[in-house]
Length: 197
Image (cartoon, helix red, strand yellow):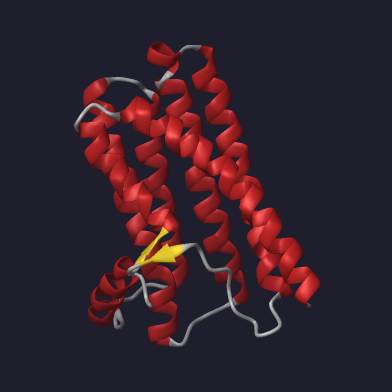
């Protein structure tokens, strides 16, 4: 089942297919928006953290536009494939590092450690997922755990409302631990994919 956010992106992209831009432009835009959001979160200034959470979520949603745009315009490329993966990993790494900095006050030094661990996990997962894709005999991309049209990574959309409701420390701890678990899961998926190949 195609994820709901990807379906929505496909509808929007259908209206942008003639726009004077490339899929890689959309990837760069999504990365810049997400990084700006992470930078605002890192300030730990409450009103800037609120804006940063909204911006980061918008950037991650925009990340679905590049692939849909490339397919709609027949402009898929190997560079775009790698750029999209690296952009996603860099976005999540920046978010976790920013959350670690922002949560230093309420959670202490452990927040910085968890933020750095989760950021490293996000970057390592990029390499693992690229390895999984390379091992797929049918040329398919890595699939995220999904249920009912929602993928595991869609949990990032909760970042904005939980921030606005004051639950960011709890979300950070759960997401940070989740990032480490996801990295371990990706390692097991890579082993399976290589064994199957």
